[in-house]
Image (cartoon, rainbow, N blue to C red; front, side):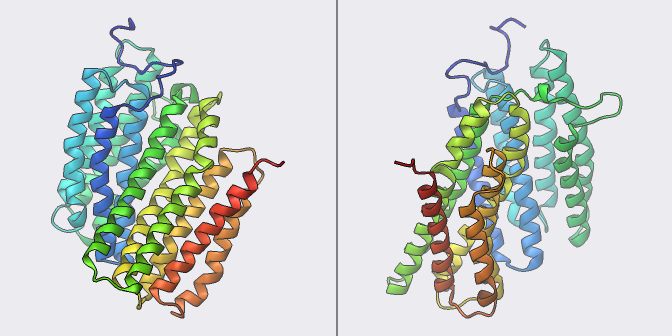
Length: 391
């Protein structure tokens, strides 16, 4: 297809991997989605509530990352692709609005919006790449068939209730999570190849980094809004400071060196599709989950600094643990190290050592929050010191 008519993103130029304003505008929908997820978890800290939010969070990430893959191939500065993103924004708002009641009376709205985004985007991509090399079109055809298959279970689950809905949706999500690992194999169409996943590494790295910023921004929003509603006290200010320092430490661990090194590696890789699949599509899910759970923990510490339940303990410690685990694996697969960073492994070990005393409720919520924040600061300082150039 002539360059003037193609809807594909350019490759090789300095601006080809730049994230456009329309993509940032699209991401605003997911600021709302992350807020809905954290509020839903805070409202129900039971095992069932955690399972519901975990499934919804993975679904939100999955629809966002699949859209990022598509805009990695297609140029969002083209009017046709931009209009498609706006349509997805409307569906995304409906999906986000239904999150708190997805397992009650708004299940069909959530499932319908989700399936529309996954199936509609894939079908639109097939139209957008007409006339391009056939491998790209067949790739989207395979993805569409997988999304149609999982969509049956999303809609079926919405018509069920309780545990049946959870099981059906978990099956639907499992189908989608498996699909990239088997290269979207379809009888008669075969499987995709990594050559079909010739991603723009700069764009993929920046997109995922921006979603981490979205999640961290929601954490700061929760901290500021909750503190503003509290009466001024020394304990409240300590909880506020603990939450803010914790968010700063999360930012430092991800962005100080790891994100930039990974960005450079995928941008200069001969196999960016494999790295984009493992490091950015799968492993970033743990990182985002860690930030969201940490935001819930910050609110728990701010509202009840002197009291802690076992559910609160798991939340306060679970956020940093998921985040460090995700970052450790991300930095490991995006480097030539034989093991994940020792600073991160050390932080995970300290959290596990702290867990026993925390479950015995030896610490208040504030003390436990302060200790987990201290561990995050230690990890950040340890890594920064280890990477400092030797004189």
